[in-house]
Amino acid sequence: QAVSVREIMATEEMKSLDNVLPIDSVEWVHPPTANDGKPVDVDFRIGVERISDMNTAQVSANIRIAITFYWTDPRLAGWTEKKLPAKLWGPIFVLNNQLGNDMSVFDEVFALVDTKKGRIKRGVVYLGKVSNPMDLTNFPYDSDTLDILLHTTSHFKCFDGSEQNMLADGRAYNIRPVVNPAEGASKTDPFCRLEDELSSKVPEWTLLGYTYHVESVKQVTGVESDNLIFRILMSRKTGYYAWKTLFPLYLITTLNLLVFAFDSSALEARINHSTVLVLTSFATLFVINGELPKVDYLTSIDKVVIITLVLNVVSALESVLVYKFNALEVIDAYSMWTLAILYVAANIGVIAPAIKKRERFVQNVKETPNFNTFMITAAQ
Image (tube, rainbow, N blue to C red; front, side):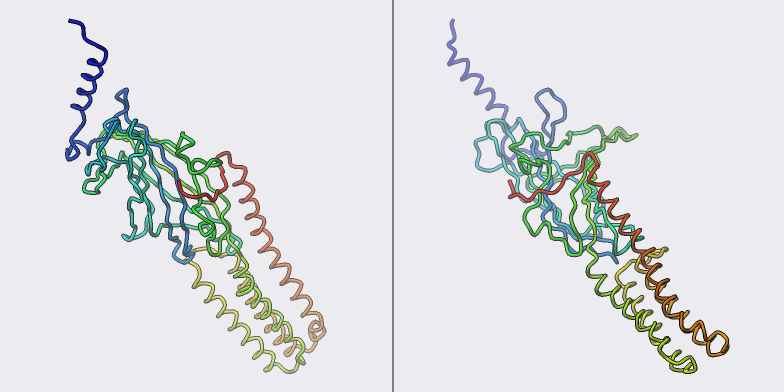
């Protein structure tokens, strides 16, 4: 008996409907596979929403970033229900360098964006504090790389958040930067965006751009992992420290050099003058230490403070020598200018290399093949 084309299509449609999982099935928690049976491809992009409280002393930073995932789940192709299955599987990254237990990770969006193909979009927000080790050798003329260290061993979290886990063998999905421009962060940079103007304003820092690197690792146990290093590059604004620390130190030095305006026989007045300024310099050093972690090396600003202290002590010793040995009184007339020139030269020797190193860092960063500047665009 002949069968019409319409009857054949109706039969195929009934078979397709029979294969659709019930909305309350626990089977939704399992990862989908691609049409060829291989692990599904998960595309992702990153949105930098806020960077705040870049704490140098605690080597930490507060962040709010959103990672948007796109993948196709063939089980949802032709989905007609208003709601998604509560146990629906979805990929997620683990943030490796979070500090403490206050990191909030939550879904900003979890939606079916193409019912015909079963295309899903998930936006996960990471809000909290991350570790941010810094090289403070050239502080406050330094630069920083704020690393966001993300990891997945096929980690997943279902739609309602009731189940989450990772694989113990193989992999459930492959990660890759977004390839569809329509799913990108912006037309000019599909991978990353800044949410708005405020996202680019980090107190004390200037954002230069970012780089990223994805590394796949197969462990001895057979499980496969992916590590993503998202590196935000920035340089420190030095105006605060120049006016609040260096400028007062230079004023202290200027006052110290005025000790030579005293008669060489007024030893007590000279010593008192120098001692007060030495104590003031020490107070400045303690203030600076409150802004920095305990490191086993001198920063540029530490060196300037020490140079200032040494000059204060040398001027006091010179006063004593001239007082004790009248024959040395002739050097008193030249000491002020000699010490002033040495002080300026020593400061240039400390600050100029630090500034040059920062400039080289910025230049080298911009020449990195995968370097990108941030684009400010509305969320998609």
